[in-house]
Structures are given as C-alpha cells and as structure tokens.
Length: 500
Image (tube, rainbow, N blue to C red; front, top):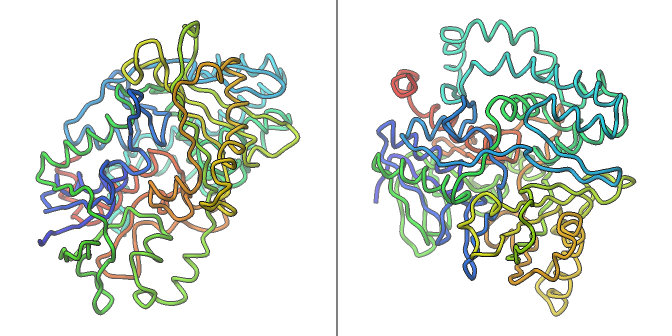
C-alpha cells in the first residue's frame, strides 16, 4: 500500500493532523496498535459502565458560545459537532483549609476564594487580570490558521497585524512563566498554592514551570466559553474526528502495530507493521511519544547521535495511578462531577498521592452507567520506577490506590460500601495500554529551561505530533500540535481556502 501520509497512532494529535490533511486532499492512513482508537483519550466499557481513560475536563466544545479551543476549530472545519452539557461550578477544590467551588465566572470564583483568603482573593484578581490581558492579545489569532515554518510570519503580518502589535506589549509575559506573574502579584501563601495547583492540573508543573500563555488561555476560555461535558465522553470527540477523517477519504487501521519507521539516506520511506507488511509513504507522522518514537520506532543509527541523546534526556511527567469505579448512586442526587483533593498542606502538591483528581461524568451523562449507578474516575501521580509484575503486584496496587479512596471519601464518605466494580490502573497499565514510555503523560520541560521540539525531526519527511511537541498535557495542546503539523505540510493558500 502507498499513501501520501502515514500516521502512527490515533490519539487526538494524530487524528487531528490526519483529518486536516485528508481535508486538504492528501491520501492519508492512520495505523493504530489497539482495537480502540483515541490513544490517551479512548473510552472503554466494563459491565455496563463506560469510562474515559484519560481526559475528563473539556472547555469550549459546544456551539452556544464562541470558542478558541483548537479541537473545536478542527471539528468545525470537518463539519462535525458535539452534543454537550454545560455546567458551573466547573468543580470543587478540597484543601485541608476548606472546600470551595470553582466557577467559570471569575467574580464568583474570587468570592469563593475570599471566604478562605480575603486579601488573597484580591491578589488573585490582579494575577488573573494580567493573564486575561495576555489572552485578549492572543484570542484573535486562531490556531487553525497557524503553522510551524517561516511562512507563519507573512500570515501573521498580513491577516493578524493589529493582534500582533498588541502582543508586542505582552512579550515579557508571553516568553515567561505563570510563576513570574504570580511573583509580581500574589503574596498570600494559600493563593499561591492555589495557582500552583491550577498550573499543575494543566501542565503537570507548578506555576514557575508553566508557560504563561497556557494559563492565560485556560482562564480566558473557561470564562468566555465555559465548560461542558460531551455526551458519550471522550469517545464522542474521537468519533467526530474519525468521521471527518473518513469523510475526506482517510483510512484507519486498528490492530495494526507499527514496528519500525523505515528510513533511507536520512529520508523516511514508510513504515513496517509488526505482521511484516511494508507501507510506503514520503511523509510519516508519529503520534507516539518522543521516547517511543526515538527508542522503539527508529534504530539508533537513524538519528544524529548527539541529537538522540539530548532528546532522550528530556524529563518526563510522572505516570499515574488510576481508579475506575462503578458505584451505587442512591442518595447522591446533589453530587457534582469534578473534584480535586489536596491531602496535606505541608507536602508539595506534586508529591505522588497528595493531589488527587476525581471525575464523575455520569452526573451529566446518565447513559455512562446502568440505572441507579455512577461511574467514577480518580487518578494521581505515581512514579513508574519500582513497579513490576511479581507476586506482590496485586497487593501493591491495593495499597497505592488507598490515597484515591481517601480522596473520594471527602466527596462520598461511604464510597467503599457503594462499589460494585473496581478497576485499578498502575504505571504498568498506563504504559501497556497507551504504549507510552514509562506510562508518562509527556515532557516536564519547565518554562525557560528548554523548548518543546515542535513537529520537526532531523529525518526528512518524518514529523511528530502529540504531547511531546507543545507545552501542556491536555486536549487543546495535542489538537494544536496536529493543526500546526498538518498546515506546515501544505501551502498557506490551501489552508486559507479551508479556514475562510
């Protein structure tokens, strides 16, 4: 088989790039190892309970409000729409000092914070004001129009010159971290911890390591577009991308593990499947992680030695413990869907087990669980090191999941008595099912300490998308990576035809 473009992996980055390239008229095929598409955003079902495997928080996917979410922009281009359920507050934070709701409306959010830290709430307003100033400069430049080569500059100058001029006044913030802005505006220790938490939830790093535009985008979008849950969970997003991809002639091959990327004279020529088949293409896009692409899919001699060594030293975000539960819902009529629990104020929020994220999406979408039940997904950081399949594995799983149960007890005190289905995922589970190096969610490159490598590689014709290419471990970042890569592979005129 021959294609114009072959994509390895059907995560959101790969699907986004593939769908756009198919729309642009390329002959595209995506090869996925597993029986289910979606990568870290796939959905699975057990005993009538439907679980999101990864992302659980979505913003700006509906049609009622304007949105800058790159994923929404791609779905619009493909002619796909999602049915969503908006909600506010977007969640609750549980600190030892108190529990409070997190609202999309910033004024209501500050009022909630003021009940715990009155002066700190005023400082939070100053922090948010600076971030929203940055957002207002960037919001008129849609990601769907951008690319990763030199031709970006004439596009910005020709089509978005006023926004470009405005952003020049924000250049100090754009190139810095959210921590820099926090240092200038916030002294209250508890509010600083709150900002660190919000940055950690978004990027896997605290404020000092998170680039400011990430936080600006998050605050601006959740205020402007609000948050919603897509009916059907992350599977609905994946289905929308696949529908658009196939509508324009894209071909998706499941259960098709890619064993190697084939190169010749520093140029890519195609891929080899595990079953031995050779697929030829002048362009290959890897949606596998940086480490998996450079260690597993390529031979060491395919890359410049120094480049390979430097790339493989890229620090990773830790892996996760996951708890997927089916529970009895009786008496939980007023339950809300998102919670973040910080167990100990004296420990860093990034300490494994100290910060636990909880999603209960069946409070919005009842079809995710049998009648009278809810689905629960709780997760927390967990190092990969030290995990192995041995006689103690099951006991260790039980032990390391206790911090998640303790977090859940802050929300549902009798959670253990309600469980009818329990699935515990470890870093080994993460690594195995997502085929990710050490089960990581992506690079941990702090702001100012290094650049994300974009879509380019030293091999002609080989590109990369996904969480190893742009800052952020969330859905908007990986969708943006797919957009930038796809647009770079076609002319600006072709992009303009579609984006208009």
